[in-house]
Length: 437
Image (tube, rainbow, N blue to C red; front, side):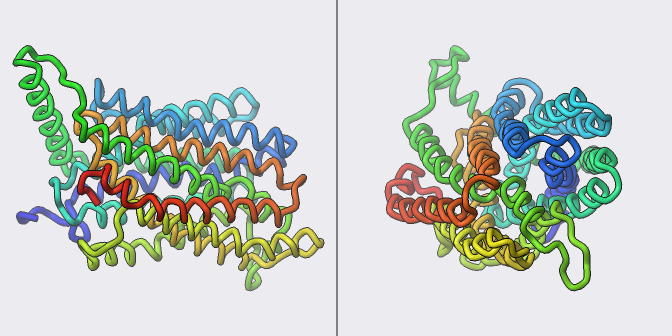
């Protein structure tokens, strides 16, 4: 701690990254909350057409971070990559504010490119705020994750309300203004990020010096060690299970948004609801639960479950959420508009799982990845979101053709089964991680 200014007991730079990511997620989730509704209603896309376009977009958003990690590690560095990425994202949202399919595709493409630069590198900067072995790291990522979800909560409420209730394209513009606020926060807080920038640079320099020594002082680049490869392989195994988790979880923006629009009674306690608002329910629960989980991990310290065990718990929870939705799906297909409380309850259970996986996964990568490849490995880990969003978007096309009981039941069976398999693999995965929890 050494007398430095603190943010909830963490380095002051965490506040800068917290609010930068909050506004970036405001823009992303604000637009994503109504994107598939915009395509099926305003553009008259069929479910299959809309799900194809939606799937291509949301999965690509998670594919480009590996390129963004490479660019940052080899050329721009983390700070400038995040800055440039945010500028491109803002341009993408403002492009969507114009009418016409060319602007739709161009805007989505810009957001994909910008997110690829921003997403892996802002998480790497969070990890750089902490010295190796700092027990605050997991808790710090949980606080950071609360910022992500504060933006994810506000975005659909504000941008979704404007889009569905006033004008679709004003909703897109609102998301763009959110990204501009995030860029302002990032630039103004630059000085608080300097310790993280310097620490990452020092770690890379130390690794390059070690490479040069291993290569006989000729400045060559030594290969990864056996331990490096073992740890990377552990990340890859967890990546597979994380993909299945996101395949269920990310149905919130596709399958479950269409479910809310078509089968849910959109009124609660006299308040008119919008289908796009339900994406905010997930984020609201994260905001409420993140401090509890951050406290829990610090309280448990070395007694907390290992990172792989947390992943297994997450899969069980997301499966239980879809198990809960099976009766709601049965009622809906009998022509009954179901209560929004079904979705709210399911999202609460999902968030118990997400908080065991997403911030923990980000923290894990910064601990086990080789220093010279940390942003690249972070990008690879984000590919789990890419595969998960492919699965989630693909499932949306079956909303009108497959019984909801079957759709929800298969999702529940796959994720709960995967969680049980992962519990059986905990010992070998921990062995690959080489003592990192």
